[in-house]
Length: 92
Image (cartoon, rainbow, N blue to C red):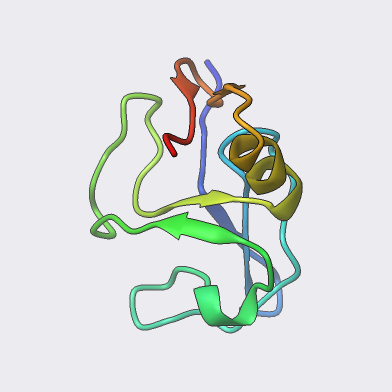
């Protein structure tokens, strides 16, 4: 069974966001109070904030993240798959 995560904690205590669409990892940041990446340190990344213990349908918990490349595709009107099932599209 695949386990989906929205961020990972690195050996040095820093954290990296993981794009909910393509799985790309962000540069590492210092964790916020809840242990998640700090959005303000991730240029071009966006986040859909959720409580740290919120469980999504794909089994992941907490906030979800979208990388700059997927943000660009969403803004262009493309529908993108979400890791673990489902689709996302930006409504303009």
